Length: 254
Image 1 (cartoon, rainbow, N blue to C red):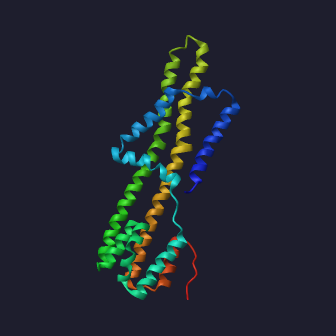
Image 2: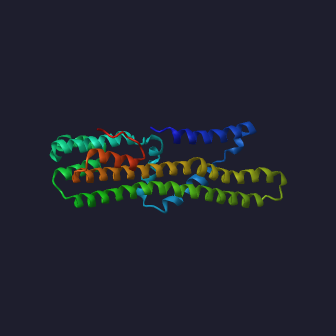
Image 3: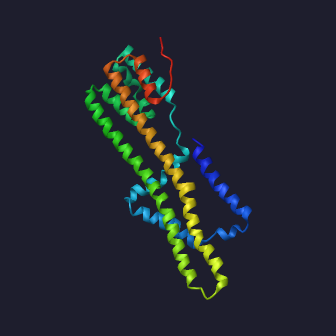
C-alpha cells in the first residue's frame, strides 16, 4: 500500500475542516440539498458519458488509488535477468516447470512465457502481447477518465446549485433578514463542488493515471525481456537495457 494518496486527501479535508471549526458555526456548512445537487448531479451526469459497467468499474477503481503498490524496479530487473540466465544455461523448456510462478507475478508474463515454451514465433508473441497491453491501457484509461469527468462536473454542479439557491433567495427580496442566510446557502454548493473536485476527484484521477502508466510500462518491460530472451541476448546486456528503461542503476555481474 502506498499511503501518499490517503495522507494527501485526508490532509486536505483536515485542513479545510480545521479552518471551518476555527471560524465557528460548522453547522452552517452543512446543507443536504446542496449535497444532492453536487454529488448526485455530478455522478449522474458522469454516468451519462460512460457505459454503466465502465462507470461502476471506474468508481470502484478508487481502491487502486489507496491500495496499489508500485513494483520494485530493481527486483524486477533482477528477476527477469535470472529468467534470462536460466534460459541461457538450461534452455527455454526449463521455464515450463515454473510457469505458475510467472502467472502469479503477471498474467501477461505467464502467457508470453507459455507461448515461448510452446515454440511460437517472436512476432506472434509480440502481436498477442501488444494487443493485451492495449486492452489494459484502455481499461485503466477509462478508470482515469471517470474520475477526471467527476473532477470537471462537481464544480459545474456546484455552480448550478448556487444559481438555484440565488433564484430562491431573490424570490424573498421582500424579507431583508433572509438575504444573508440565503446567500450563504447558495454559495455552499460552489464550496462543495470545489472541495470534491480539488481535494478528492483530482488527486484520485492523478494517482490512477500513475497506476495506468506504471502498469503499462511494466508490461512493456516484460515484453522487452521476452524478446531479449528469445533472441539469446546476454543476461548482463539485458539487465542494463531493462535498468535503463526503468531508470535504475544495477551492477553488472561478472
